[in-house]
Image (tube, rainbow over all chains, first blue to last red):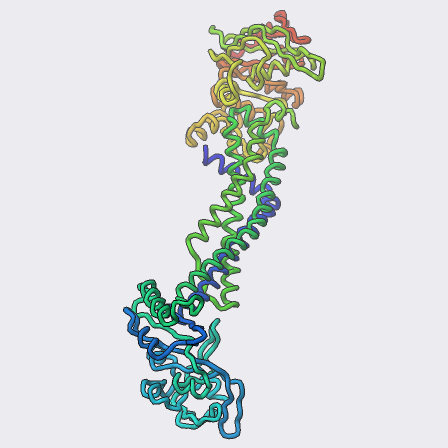
Length: 390
Length: 242
């Protein structure tokens, strides 16, 4: 029975090619926009998340504004932080903007960051040439610097910068290394910054307090207990005053972004669903016309012994066929749009089983929901009236 | 001869606004297996309504209708559909073939609803089309067939499920005289093979092909006198058998 109904439905769809095509188009547009939007948002989320992860998912970032009496963290606090279980190292960051002078080149407003040896141990592959900041540099407040790749090009024009001297805010600084070109991330690029030992950077920039510290975890799964310990240390450092510091786990940021993009996905899918709704109305319209056109056929089938349920099934299958067809084509086209978008917007294209289930499920549901009323109408036709309708 | 159809005091009433219209007024009709009955009446006599009730397309307002041991008046739509499928074969004035199906598929249609397997369907449909003389036209679509051929397909479709009664509504109404006669001959032959046929018509000449004529006028039924034609027909039958 089901097979015959399918055959009948198919024959009717084929018979009204143009009408069926237009109706399929309605569903196709709805499904493809849902699929494209979801896939694009997911891909973009994936790339944002991986960028954030590349900044260090194994890292806890502390921002310590401190109290009026103690504005920032001391060396002793840093040492305590480095002793927390499962912490592999602590890297403070001090930053400021100042002028650089090399020979006759003057460059103002250059971002200078003070880091320590831990940073370069963790970010080993950030170095292109030379060396990073080491323990001795930090302890002795050595006037050394590592240059960002753009800055090195701009100041030295292809000359070897390592071993050369620069004036940073008037202090002579020896260049010991050059950073690799970084692709840049949402947190900014390191291509035009100068990195110095934080101890000497504080002196050079006139910064008196350490307010930013990265805590590297040896085991990212223990982040909760580490954050607890860190919080305890910071609380005691700042006398348990409120709003003196924030502790940020990259994973938290990723989670937050995940939540935001999740909501964004729902919102966009919701908007796209409106077009699917319109497609569904198209199906209903087509099926109602079809039922009216085929009143005599329905009457005849009933006279020959078709039960109401069988008539209903035949029309329902027809609308499901139309919408499934639209759904599958919409899936393909939606994915193609997403692939093109992923190439243009440079993020990785991912397709999940959910996407397919969603497309197929949604379109089948549309077929059933919007096909039910016309199918019921057909099944309830009075065979006498239907046969008279010539 | 066993009785296969029994109508007792069938009344069909329609309410049009305030006016009440009695279309069938206490119809009593018994039909035995193997009969060929014409229900003869002019338009407006109630014969179409009677045919609808006979064909279980409609239910009477009151009265008792027993068809092949089924009490029809208190069946729901689904059960009526089953009865139509199993007990009744319809032949319509305008053939009512589905244009999108070929002759074979049209004949298979009622068997789909009878849940006959595809192989059996095909076999039976082919055999019956051969019986009505359309073996060569099985794969033709209705628009590739003449009116007479289309009506033959429709007749094949009506008998393929081996129904208790074949119910024909002006079966020659859309055909020329000569083709009409051929169709009537086919009915006669089918009747001779034992099929019970009820034909609704307004045409006395056509009614003469049947063995028994029942007149309907203004919702009343009266048994017709044996016509001259009936005798001719009986003679014809003898010729047919000899």
